[in-house]
Image (cartoon, rainbow, N blue to C red; front, side):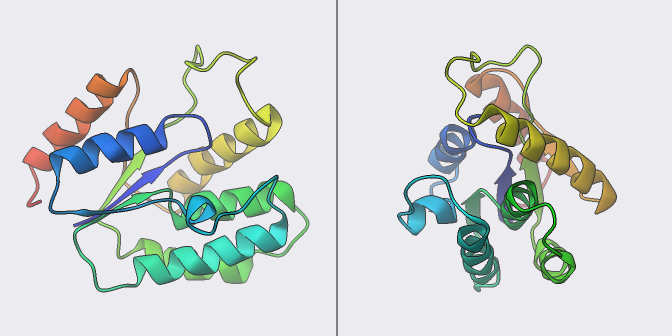
Length: 168
């Protein structure tokens, strides 16, 4: 089973990915391409294109027992948010093809009230823009995402209950 954890920055994706991996130790946890590629600073559109291509390769590998800490759709949302005039149709098409191979999407939206205080949020406008795009695109693409909220224990319990009904 391929599991993708989706959401904007500072919503707890990495913490949740690590918790899921602790429960599913025979799975491989792939960190988000931003960290894998050792990027520094605020990424540009070119950086997100590079991350997008890297993410496509990760999803298309033969590993079927994998947890993705960030997914193609996240990166595409960041690309669109930082460069809204860029034509992303070809990326969108590639994303839809790769997304079809992922078995479970776990979406962590920004919560209301936000669990991260406004003084702690890095790039709050970008964060909100990506969150809004993800909500829209998950619906537009017909992705059946498991939405998780609350503290880490509640999020993990929601996921493990879902997986208990699936062949993991």
